[in-house]
Image (cartoon, rainbow, N blue to C red):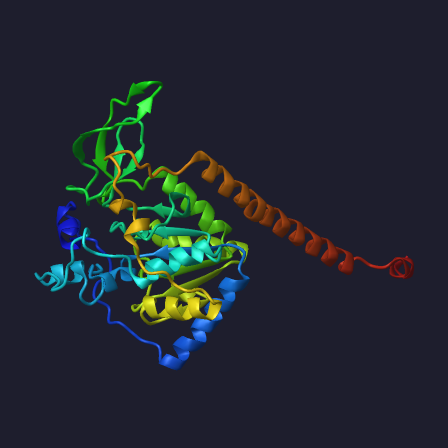
Length: 343
């Protein structure tokens, strides 16, 4: 359960702004904003979705900083009334909508702060998601760094040893490593490959959409702003004010499930129901055999797009600036006739 996950972390005082009241846009305003968002998605080149704990609350998993969040109540000496186990929670309408939007090429990538594994269980492929804070259903070898899908949530958090041998074969011999949980504690660095993919995708995106997050945790909370210096837009959908509201191009204050339902309907996309057949945690495979690794080719591909759109954008911006300065100089120079008159 998310409460047990929170209890398993090291003591940490600075958990951000807690318990800010929720706010809701009127229904007609929500409809208008959703239509605008759908239009932006339809016309965008590269859409990236950033997800936080708010997209899993309708699955029964409490968030952390909301009015009834784990850390908000912890400060009051309380615990949430509803707290489903990670094993029993199922992907929400938002999880399934994002999966469908990826299938239909409307969304290119997901950058998630969530550790509940619901994106994985929606059927998302690894090449479409970065998991910055880990995943309860993923274990990782401390020797070869390979990640594997589990049928059950890990028994520990904080990158601790699960006392299981890695079964990967390296150069014809079994790997000598042990498997660890992937859940970060406060002092841990973000996983290198996930962070690298997140940096590139956030920068390349011409539309970054933030769902169910107050964007308080860094560096993940700052990633959506990467696209701003290249002319991209930032959309925030959340019930509470966020750290970057002033920099957003569009803010929708309502439930993320409702927004995704309206947006997909406007785009003509039908959201699939969750199915155990596409849930890798429910598949009958031998433990430690289903890989969950970011490939070198995926990193190379997005780096190529970064070089194309972002590095070239810097060059074009510099060239445009030089041309403007040259024109201003030409404009200020005296004409030949004026030079003659002066002599």
